[in-house]
Image (tube, rainbow, N blue to C red; front, side, top):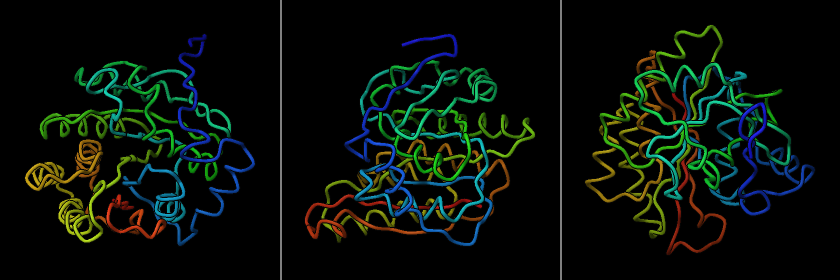
Amino acid sequence: MNQPGGTVRRPAVAGQFYPGSREELSDAVSRLTVAGPLRKALGVMAPHAGYVYSGRVAGEVYGQLELPDTFVIIGPNHTGLGAPASIMTAGVWKTPLGDVAIDSELAAEVAGSGNLLEENSAAHAREHSIEVQLPFLQFLVNKPKIVPICLMPLSAALCQDIGLVIASTIKSTEKPVLIIASSDMSHYESQERAKGQDELALGEIMRLDGAGLLRTVQANQITMCGAAPVAAMLAACRELGASRARLVRYATSGDVTGDYSHVVGYAGVVII
């Protein structure tokens, strides 16, 4: 649906991945957010599963950051809809906590640099990977603004180029911006195998090596859904002067269900 302010992107997974009412969602995010010494960061990796499984990891990441008002959020495309590299440059995203506006000026600058990202709302309409990040930002920040980017699996070169475009745009603005890569780790592996596979991927992330991450994921058949978003985020952060990464928390769905035969892994990482 379109209106003068652009597209209105309505919740796709409210009441499924997270509570569907304002009061219940606010309570859930409050419980999941772990406050710590506030630190500035250039980027983060946060998971996007149902809050009962991955919410504590995401809440621990966001609760320890000195958050700006503006966020570039890069998520994987699980649905296969839309363009391989999609951006929205105008409109609002609704959640039970209210509206989150797209930073149209910043998004337009990103979209107009290098013609790497296609204006495409279809890629975002049913995709959950960006949506589940928003309630945490709404809970912690007054009127956050976002630049939503949705990526299918892409080459290392293209992820690098997208990251450099994001970094160049952030450099040109005077306001602080946090880059969020939305990703879960291994999917439906045994606990032992998932942890082993995820350690390989996290090793590359700790080295801030996006190309190395993509090579490792492919070579070891790691079922990490957001490798391309993370690679783009790492490229942007390196260009912005990142020096190190810090693993905030790692967990699996087995920690909640008690079933360690088929788990999904979740990791929270901060790039400084």
